Length: 316
Figure 1: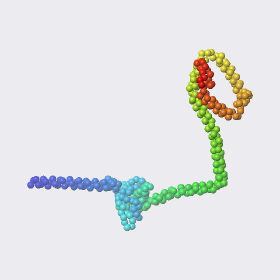
Figure 2 (figure 1 turned 180 degrees about the horizontal axis):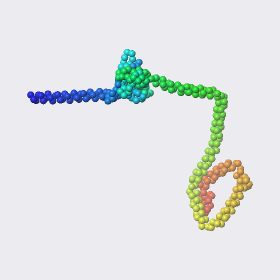
Figure 3 (figure 1 turned 90 degrees about the vertical axis):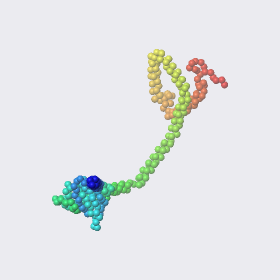
Figure 4 (figure 1 turned 180 degrees about the vertical axis):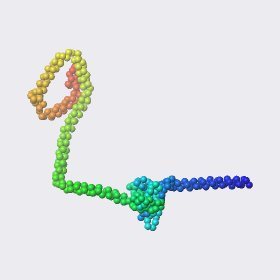
């Protein structure tokens, strides 16, 4: 008998635990639902109503603003025969005066809607479950149009000014200007074409001389070595008489150069002659042929050796 009473007592404790667990779960569910709706369950809120001709893109959890600060949210959008009834809540510390407006506004360019509370000057405060005056903000596109209209007017004025300037230009004068530009361009092209051949010829001659110098590089190195030996020999000698003689020669050379500059003598006439370029060009070609022949048959031009003795002619 005592065992049966003990079992009943144990069953009663389990039922209490289950009940407490269920109540806690329901409370958490309600808290989570209100939290997802954006409603703060820890603060006291007041409920209000407002009517609009249509929902105006309002929905549950749409924000309620006062001076740009969120003070509540929309709880429910109720469809009625004469329009739409919006139920929303606001914080209890926001004392809304009687006659205040609940205006629907757009918060961004994506047409996200919210309710903004505009206080009236009435000193009497509304109570919970009162109905506020519903108004709608000027459409966002109308606002944009108001801002775009002055810009459009300025653009129209600019286009009209441009048309007047274009109309003032004489077409014949414009055509003459274009024709002159075309003539100048053609003359520049012709001048470039006339200079092309002489420049190419000069470059070709310079390249040929450079190739010949490269081919005779070894012989030029030998000449430089011999000049180095000669310079070593000269360094041993006394330089004072040489310098005196060099000064005299430089003075004589200066006098000769002055005569050449004045055009005196054969050399002066040669320098002042305008055909010197053509002669030098012919000389360069002759020098080119001479260097080529010198490379092929050097014994024809060299009859002595650096180390003494005579260069023997090859037997035929």
